[in-house]
Length: 420
Ligand code: HGY
Ligand code: MN
Ligand code: MN
View (cartoon, rainbow, N blue to C red):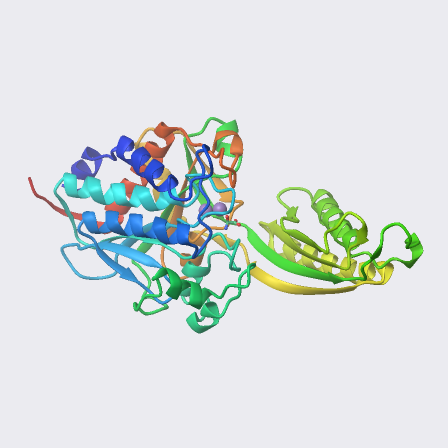
């Protein structure tokens, strides 16, 4: 029964594309395909409400925990830890419609296909979306899944202050998603996340499925530079304590450091705010972020040490005060080899081209890897573009990835009956 049943059902690809479009209309960015739903904003609330309504329509039991993670569960023949899939529905400010959303909405299509086929699984099936995965407003990234899996205490997470001064706990109350389900949650039986690659590899090699072996290490820091505002016309260069100059040198340094280390080292200054940010005033203050990533923990530590040493010299050389605050730090993660092999086998059985690769982006799955068998499935990003409203994945790739997710989840949840 197991084999023939599992091979007999598939995802409704059109329904998946329609759900993605409907969710993308919440916080739509002009007439682009993208959406802006920063964590715990009104747009995030509206997106959450839409997905929760879909979960209810599917007859799923919906639970909301203390950090606002939402998990919909379809009962199995036996009670017990669920086979869970999921991702996030919060976005960056220049969000595409697939980043995170695909992993959640494909999970709903898995449930829909199971119900349509009359399949009863031994273990429950669950679909989750986790709070604040992007980390753009409230750092660290993967905040909700980090709390869900016990990596950060709920009380500490609720006190986090965002880039706009808002506080996580207050924003959860404001949008009505400070739930009562306990944090951390008991681990699921397994966790599988379908996600777009967000990089150029699968697209460049015309490969349909990415079999994700792990996630590279992530180091986020916020650097504050204190100088002295002064007149841009009258102040001799030697007298300046120019925070703008210091910030620009940091951006150049981390870029050059990545070049010196070579791939896979990457480095980004993504946020940079100057004060008073005026054409004729030497900047007194700068706040900037540095995002360093590498698959090798030792190299990531070396990059962090090189940056710290550079900042010390920079402060002395520019007469500024420089302080650093850690926003996020996650070591590289490897997924369960058996789960990786399962994804690889299923992709092959479905006749899909596939290859193994490590994820350059952070994902909720990396938080589940220490607590349960975990895997990720990638589908190609058009020209590798992501965190951009132009983000695109071809419908046939969306369907293929969702079918891999369906089959992997049914294998793990075990089909025990098929009702006509
Ligand atoms: O930053 C990341 O890798 C993810 O998009 N949160
Ligand atoms: Mn994502
Ligand atoms: Mn993202």
